[in-house]
Image (cartoon, rainbow, N blue to C red; front, side, top):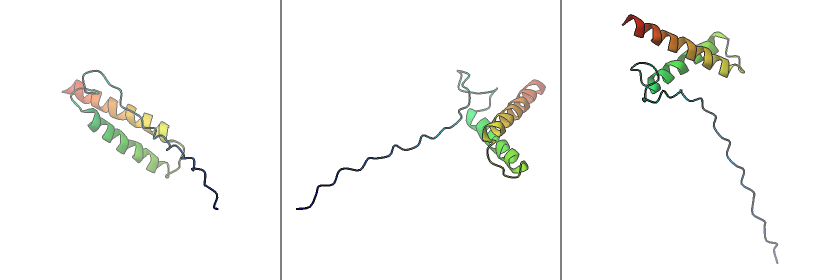
Amino acid sequence: MAKARSPRAVKPKAEKKVLQMPDTGNGYAVGNHAPVELEHQIRLRAYELFEQRGYVHGYADEDWFNAEREILARHAEQKQTA
């Protein structure tokens, strides 16, 4: 008679770590710009920084924070001149 197999242990799926835009409580991050629009602009700028570095990995957080600082500063300047 064949031996019964023990059930396989299922590996838990790795959690995706995603940086979230800060919530100001009113549904918008800065001025009248939707958080999704700002996040998209930050994501594009972070990728540009990655390109400028020659596609060297290991600086994703630094690129994201630098891009976030640049984009939010740009929007703050636009709001002041408007």
